[in-house]
Image 1 (tube, one colour):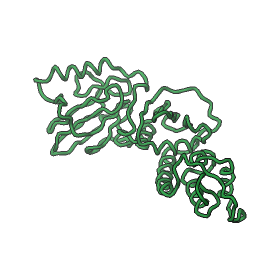
Image 2: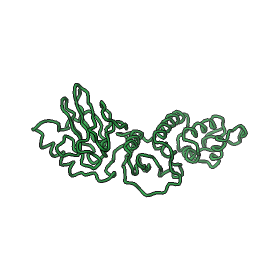
Image 3: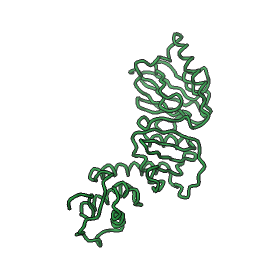
Image 4: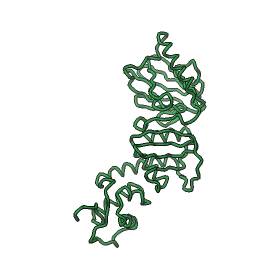
Length: 314
């Protein structure tokens, strides 16, 4: 087995690594004498163990109170490989190639001082709230992150930041109840989540619960939201290949040669939005249709010359 390590990609331990050494059991938990010490209430004293043997990494939950999760699935035992993500408490760890300068903290007495330093860091870093759970979307894709939080029944606000845009997903015991995006305040919460799922970079932070009244609270199972959101994302990517850039202004073709009576209700509704000379992005924001459905309708309206890009010769 190549030199692999557990790398912390969220939480107060972010950036830390622990070498996975062949032939050694690595015990993870809250107790100070263990190999990997996670000092927080959601972690059991002897939470889980990694057994590295014959080139395989076996993860076994030791009957923990809050569970052990691999790639969003709660497990009692699992074989983990390079690229897999493990959630214990509020810490997400990823199996990665070990950094060249990573200390072999699983070694014997010669590195006891280094190991004790790691444990002391854990003792000093008690996770009193969900606020300590941070990371990057590039390291933990959003569908996986939401699945992790849903399965582990997290309550709080998932704050996401990308450039100057902030999005929030509100969760109650793992259930998605509301969502907003700062640059598209009029979006329905479900449509906002579908759009957030397209983010491939940025940062995330799990904050404590916020008191809110949600008149348009989401009432869909998380699994359904994720499956439908990923389906729409795939369709949208295909549709966008033949769409103008999102900041392109759309206008109605004048004179209008095509017949409005030939348009179905969904197409007519988007045609009426284009009368206001919006950008492609604004059309997607204003319509009640999903982004993928809107993109398909826009593409048809452009092809049939009901609408065009501003400045384009008809």
